[in-house]
Image (tube, rainbow, N blue to C red):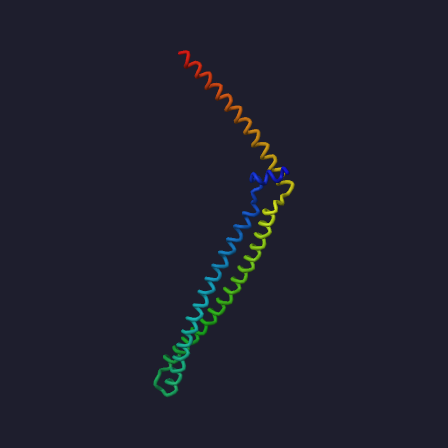
Length: 173
């Protein structure tokens, strides 16, 4: 009965619940950030693949022109080098996409854990399940508040008596 009354008065504010809510919000933001980073990496991969297709066509064209003698060796080598740079950029972009996918998956797992923790803490808070230590702490805080209330009442009584004395003194003047 006393525990229910303490809970009704808000004595059991739940720091674990508040912490779980913060963790859930942070995990959700992390998933959103990881998703945005994955999209950016995928966009970069598409650009790299497009650049490679252009460089590959240019290298093939340079090969044909070099074979018939209308392109210098230096220009042919530049086209081949550009193709290799573009291919390396595609590989790097693919790796970045894979890394961002892995980061997104980790963020999603963290979100699931945070969601489960939040669900448990909400369940505990909704069922008013409190540890004995929490009950004892709340009761001690209640006793302290009751003592402070009694002290304030005594101070108010003293102040009211001084006001009455002051009124009597003023009336005599």
